[in-house]
Amino acid sequence: MAIVVETSGSSGVPKRVIISEEAIEASTSAALERLGGPGQWVLALPEQYIAGKNVIWRNEVSGAPLVRTEGAFTAEAFVEAVQSLEHERKYTSLVPTQLARLVDAAALDRSFIGPIARLDRILLGGQRAPFGLIERAARLGWRVTRTYGATETVGGCVWDGRPLRDVKIRLTDQIEIAGPQLADGYEDAALTEQRFTTDGSGTRWYKTGDAGSLISGLLQVSGRIDDVINSGGIKVSLAAVEHVVQTFAPDAVVVAAPHPEWGEVPAVVTTLKPSLAEIRAAVGNALGKPARPNHLVTVSVMPTTASGKPDRKRLARLVAGRTQERRRRGLFG
Image (tube, rainbow, N blue to C red; front, side, top):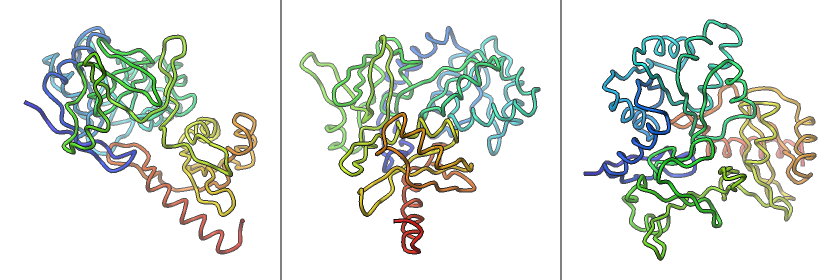
């Protein structure tokens, strides 16, 4: 028996992924082994996506009731959910936006710190965490583990750079993952053939579409292989630019913006009001002049996908529209 789970669509059109019971069992078992045993979970993620489903599956092993947060995610609702946990072991999974809200709330009201510190583990995935976020959480005594994976790998299968049991990683032109937790493929047979391959030994590999490296045996993910733009003949990684920019605006997202001379340039979208001049100087020092963002777009609310990730496709359209309008009005070249 297999189930079909739709991807969040953060990197393009959502895909329908076929996942077997065996893959779910392998993923759940390996995760609970790394955690140190089953426990009770707080579900604060949409349950139609793989991260939410993993919370449900892992909680079932404990036999304890699953605790859900109600309504929009707030620090108050999350702490109330955590305080209702009764199992010896207590866990949750969050995306960086949620963890950032909790850290910010704890800075204003220290009564939030203790209840969240009761959690044995906070799994953090879905996207790269803003610069310094995990360190801020650790200073509060919160135990955070970064996870990396995809719906096609039944969620996070690399924790803090280390693969879970029986998971294999290799680096080609991108990160590829193998193991018993791999999905069967997609409902789209052609896409399955493109993204899942079998080597000469019979091992199936999933092509993630992410770039990365192994440093001291730990996997470091640097971004999507298709997020590299050509700006005036120079290749620029938007993920690398974003990492620097988030030291000024933790919620910043960097997307490509059209430019009549350079083709494409990095553009920053944030709900904050950092100095573009300071950002350009820092990015230039770290990555070179071609990587400096040309535009800063401020929004009142960061648009997200249903899974809580920044909606990069929508942001790119927003930036293109804003820059075109400003260019028409002669505000920049």
